[in-house]
Length: 303
Ligand code: TA6
Image (cartoon, rainbow, N blue to C red; front, side, top):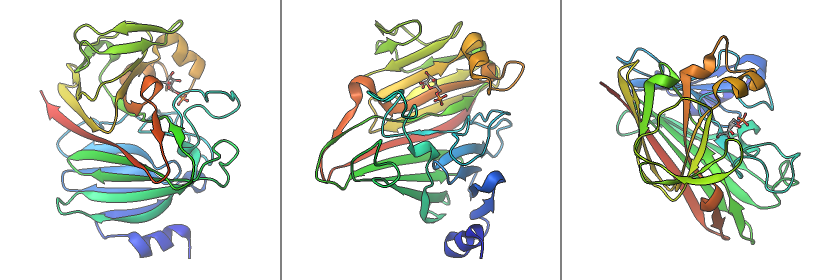
């Protein structure tokens, strides 16, 4: 029996949760909840699609050049950055944003919850293939709940006998009409590290608008953010708990050309990353036996 058939037999729920053989041997889970549906690649526990009934455009952005290949991060959706954010602190050979997003996660549960949301929980044990990069015993789980809203909960358990420092993010790419037609609200007066052209600490004044490469780590904030999109006439509300950093990123022209996988002629104009994280000043010390959860909930409101 194929892995997909095994998963369908063990966890499938008709009309709610089904598994599919994706391209290049990756397995995809499809969640159908009341008011919306989502798709998750088991590699990386990577939510790459979420569509809300009655809302024309998908809420998450997926590059037309996204590749679904073993060991490669999917460009778009919500990459899980764990157990570090950005480059590794000391070894430039280790993958940026950690190894969770390119690892094989396993299904531990799924179905319909009491609110008719379709849910799926995936798990990743560390300390084996990843032990060179991460010499700690830990367990990681991601639970996705999909319907008219999308929720994700990233839970880290320290199952070893030593503390570790954790950097993490749900690095979500949101679909927008155009980068110059949106603004981000909720971070007014927050301090941030501006990482474009060096690193400088600054303070946000009023909403964020975009006219150049933007790569900012807002720190010490648990604020709800709202992406206001005048082009698509919608707001995307980003509620979070267990996260003290919010990363706001758009590559603009030059970096987009260097990256080369954001879609032509200017795919970079149609997404904005607002990432709920614990990064930089807000990295966590997780002691033996401790459990930490980073939770987000996304809601779309038509304007
Ligand atoms: O979160 C922003 C960022 O750190 C940018 O600097 C850019 O590198 C982006 O993540 C994408 O990183 P990736 O490793 O997915 O290409």
